Image 1 (tube, rainbow, N blue to C red):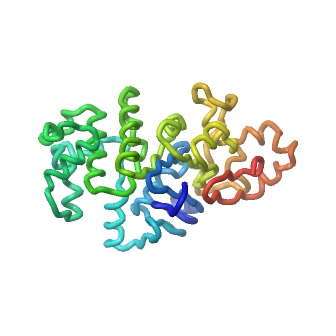
Image 2: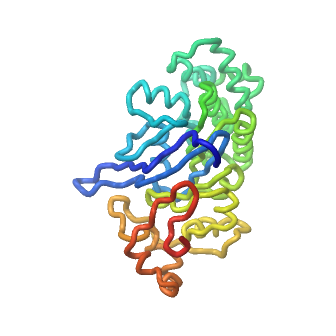
Image 3: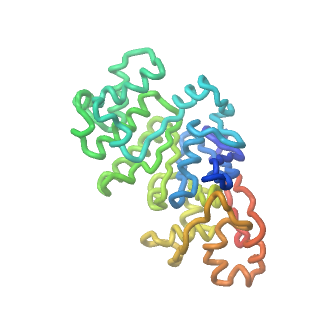
Length: 320
């Protein structure tokens, strides 16, 4: 990424109350992340790593315990007026289009809803038609009176995307945007995201567990584990020459992977009980194999916390 970041987080932390009086859960814990103008960033990690919580914080849907979220050069103030303005410029695309669409609303009503909520002036019908056309539903008027159950899964996801586009946002945050779609349709939706970037200059943060998806659509990749970014860089840097053992483990399961197979055992620790040292060390293949001990960093892996990744880089005692 070059120039001033568009959507960004700095030292961001999101903490949830503990269960039954237990310690609080640090779902996001000191994250720096930025999405540049006209850039697609993939945020990758296992379920429960904090990536969806981070995305919601960037949308202003979750108030951080510490740190800042901002758009362009302006930090987000968590006031009703500022949040409403922010959410018009940063739009969410959900994983499940069936859940995102009201079954009693027509396609026209679903797409026009954002215009009405934000009190947008102008020709509503023309704006809805333009958004549907940009989302690949043509001719758009043919879809106005349809209901979600009359559409295919791919068409429903395009309606959700059109509902975001109708407000002419600067950034979309897409949370697992193709996870519920058939393989044949996934490529079409990913190609649509690329066309929106190239044609409109639209930026996107794509939240996914799939590094293969990141390879197909992203300019940069940020890998998240237990509330922290552990590796971040260009798609070529991260996916062709991964440095963090966690990234290597995720990448090793892909066909034609550039790294040898790695069996990732166990579950991530409880975010309410984050262990000392590197957050990944209990599952790390480098520690388990004795390699960390041979190069003299195992003590650091088990006892010293790794620094925060700022911009590009890796948070790992072994490779850092």
